[in-house]
Length: 392
Image 1 (cartoon, rainbow, N blue to C red):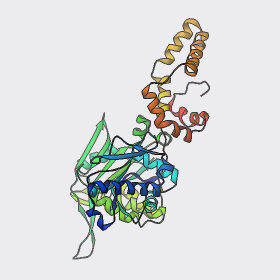
Image 2 (image 1 turned 120 degrees about the horizontal axis):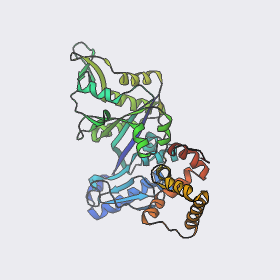
Image 3 (image 1 turned 90 degrees about the horizontal axis):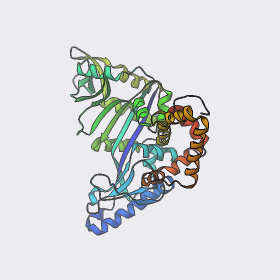
Image 4 (image 1 turned 45 degrees about the horizontal axis):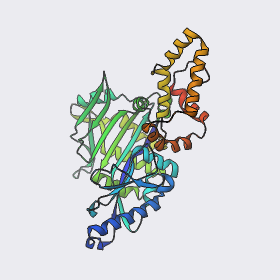
């Protein structure tokens, strides 16, 4: 299966009144606050994320930023108090975007249309488009080797004005691989300074290693390779215009797939001549023509707590300590210690500053996704704790 999605966006709002250039810097601050209020209401940020407060880490180049609610992801609305031309930036991290789309039931295109307002213009300054190859025969190391051997290259379609035929022109690209052991785990196609760059990487391994918010999905599949195109500035502006025209999920899927294909059309090369699309490019083409694809459903979960619990069982030494106590004094000693810990947590223990900060950012989200502990156990602990019997 191939899933297409949008991983991250940065939206920029600009005031539309032609008289805004006559205002001084102090008036711009008032305008910016008013625009944020309008956007906040249009997007229902308080209803989705929580109340507004100061965000101490503003997006690069901006001086005043706000966050909404307390979460373990980054979402900020910001402006520069002295530079009106920078507008209002709305920065969604990938996790924040998943959270917002899941709670509202919107897509990125319907979100942009929903928050439109006659008092500001908006366009994306960044958008990340993804194609996820799930349980598909995609080998990242092999892709990298074929690129290095020039057996595969990126091409662009162009129309020959003399014979009116579609031809393929090779596009010079920079290729960079990140190698771990004997495997290439990540490939970068294009320069980091350009307006577009493709990243090909092992999404399954990344999610499992980091207990990411897609862990449940990762452990259910055998392989998961992501093609992720990062589009900035002019490319992002062009995609903004297209997203405003989208009316259906099918149109959104086709926009994502066609953009990735048009920008990064990989073809097999024989003696410097393009022969045919690579397997992975052809799969995207087939998916578009056959409808054999789907829009990635947003699902936002934090697996940090399950990782902490798994560490108790698998790496902390707690289990071996309890086992030693059992061998020396019997199971009664183990029961005594566990009861003592329970009493301590119930009546005396107070979490440190890090613990309290984590709860501030995560407590409501955990309670929302897992209203009871049995739900949490069923969805998390079976995949993070090595099975060894007992009540789990």
